[in-house]
Length: 225
Image (cartoon, rainbow, N blue to C red; front, side, top):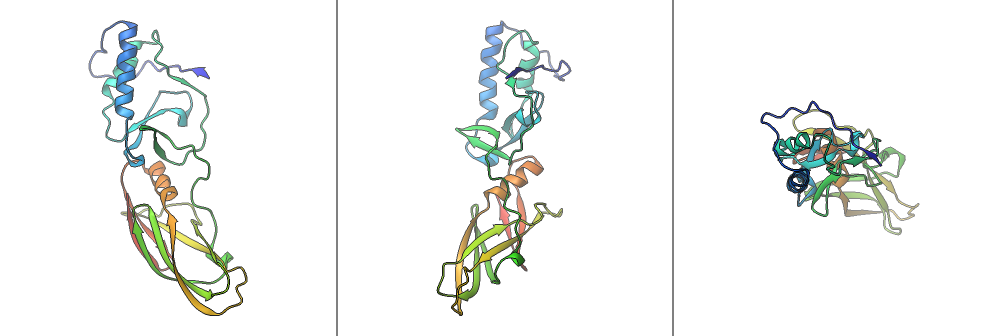
């Protein structure tokens, strides 16, 4: 852990608050807790720049937070008062933002975005419908079979958003029929978690609420969060 080297050029419209070091520390702790408090992941996404020496180690606040008093207190500390801002100086990969224990932070969870796989690398199937409830995408899928349990994986082959209003994500479903010898035409509703896709959007566009148009094959559905 290395001590944070604060930049002295933080712009503050009004003079920083006066007070003893202990008072500034207490006010800073309270203000930090206030602007970082959250109930859901979607509320998080305002990066508090210059609060670490590692780019994805900066603190994270709610997207609607007013950070004026927060930075004023940093200026008031003037490097003389320890505000507890320490950091490992690296930039680990993140997957958006999260509200963990009611505090906004980066999401360092392993697993990342949706996997980079392709429909044409699996067994054939047909997409019959799409529906979204919350962060769950339900895809109605049909394929030949009836004797084996089939596996389905939601894929994001290019891992990128197509810029439009709203942005678009083109997804695939990888299918493994486990060499099912039967030829009945089977249809099932398969649920997929869209949280990784939401996290990717928030990391790319600064957190908060948003929407995107999701394509699976030739079918599309709007996803709002």
